[in-house]
Image (cartoon, rainbow, N blue to C red; front, side, top):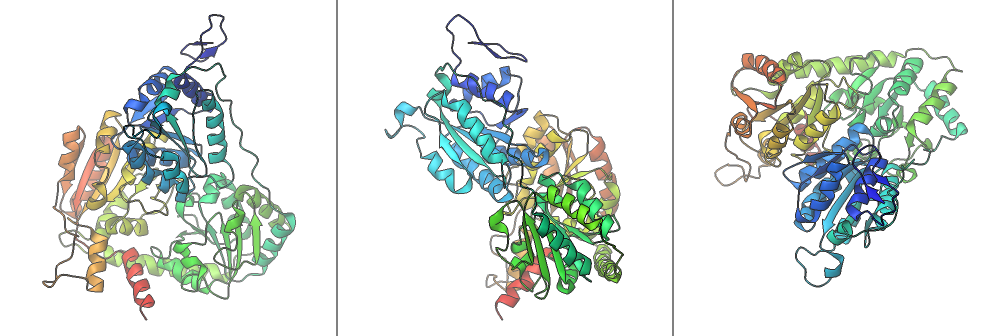
Length: 576
């Protein structure tokens, strides 16, 4: 066979040439539909990166291996297709583990590939020789090490199929440097078509509709499963047919816009106290593609009424009934289930319930509380007041990459979710700092939409060098940094719990008031410093128009967010 760059790359020939493992790897990615690879260069990767580039696949080189895996994870979430992270072995592999673990808890189809020492040097105290497969196995669906180049196409097909089937998740493949360099007379990987997702049992769908039709205070909670199954149209059609109230969370945020009359916002009671009140009074929950996990207090009465019945739909059978007894358990794809629910609901009469007016009252009360918080005008700026300016300055099509921390949590409570795939969070691992590589992936996947990353000064420090990546790839991302010169959430928790020094100071919470706008300018981007409310809106407008990475460094004061108040309340209850 011979290697030819272009639309068709590996062709039969009579010259006895055989492709290398690196060439097989690159051609396999082409056949699997991979359009870009996230990487950080290292000695184990030089040959394969050259072949990937020759194959016409975009190479996105970043500044930290964890940033590589975070970005690939985010790209997989946004595109709903497996994405490739390629890092060198040894410390490159260990650096990547945090991003892989993040993808594991987020059920994201990341294919994480690490180079390594040559196979002939295994177990001989070689440089950077560690058991990479054993190290990563607890946080992936599947892992293997290729020992010969002819295994590469098979293993990539297997990796893709594992990542994209059932409850999706990351997989890992270690490929030693001599496997990339060696030759083999085999074909590249073939396209992989994941098996059809399971359809729902018709009787269980009918039972669910009967319960919903008889309910007086029903609630629908849509989670990431609705995003992964591509069920946006079905969710909206279902709630409009049945007049059922909807709350969204995780990747479902924005799947139905928050300003839809039947969408009552965030299904996170830590950030939406209207949801907390509603869930406490509900008599029935329809949970679509959402784990009944820590965010819903594991189904406990603290969040979900003990008397309420629960219908849960999930593609992962083991999830059903894990933390809460169910009235109806539906093991199926969410989109197919919603299609069945719509058909079954069409045979019944549905009218708007008085419950909807009560939910609107809960929502209005919570919004009034946030508006009162936003009225603070003094300096340093109150985060709620800052977000009252931000919400007016952002175009409605803006896509948001959220970090963690108190400043960010204020924004998650105040800003509406308006765009499918446009509310990118850290995931259940809570990997603060990853919003920066996430924003890079979001802009690469949706280049025509404005992308805004919202973070605090503490979280920004983890992957701050990825600002350089954004500049090198000319990605006009707007970075909004709420700068309170510290780890704000932990600072507030320490103050609430009294875990302070003898002089009343916090422990390990204070930072310098660094000018992060100047930092980005040093990388080649733009930015400005904001100290007053009237500066916020114009600064955001200039940043969005700058056509390059732009940092708005906003000086804020530390104020307990609704999220932090929720945590404090939970700790107080646990000590009673």
